Image (cartoon, rainbow, N blue to C red; front, side, top):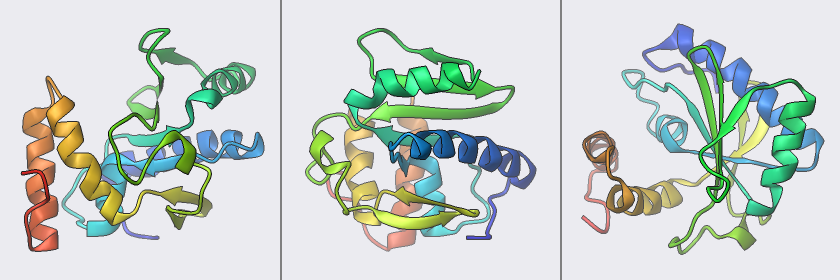
Length: 172
């Protein structure tokens, strides 16, 4: 993939930062799955979008291992809470968020993260996985219903995806 969003300069720095995190995980046998804004951009290829962070899914069981790997590589991160399965990695304005798969999805579960149900992509020179377009469609209604502060932003993304697809998403 050699297409860039509207915020190209920030995104190029973000790519390198995310590739480092992906490489650390892959070297340890952990294969994250990219989702969120980048997945939306990947499928729509809308150069007017902005991608400000990279979101990745992982298995809950890998959380402690990922934390140790980040510490070993001197990469600073925060956890939302001890019981929250999210790691936020920031370097200046660059942000990679790693989350567990969560609950409520039909096609994505803790058990499916190791299966071959995701699209394999070339993430600017790094082989990795991204959720499928169908899975992206599945995530949006659930994320919208769970959201407290991001409903407006999510609805904008949902409308953008619906325009791209030429139809309404299920659940709206």
